[in-house]
Length: 399
Image 1 (tube, rainbow, N blue to C red):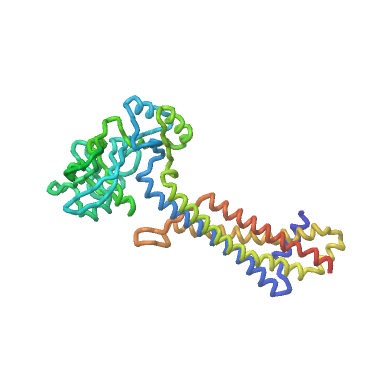
Image 2: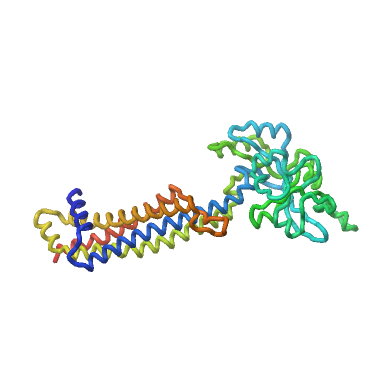
């Protein structure tokens, strides 16, 4: 192998007397460089966009969420809540109530979801950081925090005591309703704050105190729709889930952050795969140049190959010369391309070279996973291309 590697290095770095072969070799190396460079740039850009997109949902989504397997509500007594708080790995948890409601303000209407939360909710989710106007809930009076989308649709402002927001929810029960006003529970509240996360969530949720939501929905103090939990860094999610299931006698569903956003994660993963396959196809086309370059070198070195064979080199050793030459070309071009792309991504992270808006730089991310993907892709495709090209060396011996 040392003999084959030595000759392969000489062939790769020594200038050929045929200028056409030199040009083809340079083009092949540039193709590998460009393929590795562009593949890592695209993967890093997509990773940045992925993290940027998921950062919006993190303001609302806990590490784990406990939901009833059937029906809308679960029972959480003080004893059961105490047992949840004692689970190793659980730092905070919040009991919540979610239900669709009807909003009415100055003859403007909007359908949203009320989310009643207890005093622990800000420790489980970073919702307070998303409030840009007003303040978080005060438990001493009926208040709500609405999304920026709801605020724009209804024309809401914070702490406007002259015009209160009306929240309506259908009353449970059976039978015919003679008076439409009797069909709804109606509560009036003051808007204490406005949050902004993204367009979808800003038009979806209205936050209130847990007691207000229970009164609006005619629920008792131990009835909730979910429990949201924040875990300690490095906590064993599976172990925590097993302990939670042991506490509840009824059937429950426990979802992590990825499962709560299953559609979003699937969409992002599908897009990531599609982008990777497209740029891998570009890289495959670029590696055709490597195959052509090695074949041209084999044709140019036919006499040298016959001389090496006469001196005792085996056909496999001669084949390995050109195989290693192709692998070296892919390795050097790939490493240089990867290195240059790493530098460019680092400069973007440090100096915001490309901006989406005057205040928002294009999000990028450097991850070991993307580095490994590029190295493996270049390595596997380069190995296949070099193996195919090196097979032509046997024909050179036959002539």
